[in-house]
Image (cartoon, rainbow, N blue to C red; front, side, top):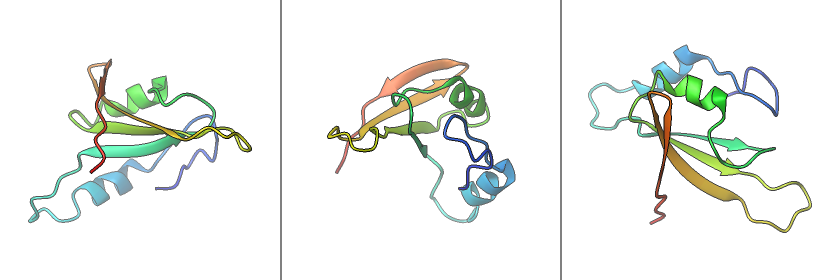
Length: 96
């Protein structure tokens, strides 16, 4: 989804679009289980914006990719969290 804030420091998305995407096929057994985004200027840890946004999505994991600075030889770092009632809990990321 497009970052409506057009900012490298915060995000804003059209919640109606996310809801439309999340519930596009009510007859399917599929469900939204994770929201992915990147942190381009900070570690892959939920920001206050992430925590605030997560209020509307209990039980959904926040998969955050920390993108290294351009020209760095560091690899991107991927972490995942459950954020419920303002409490941030890291969960294991398993790649299969």
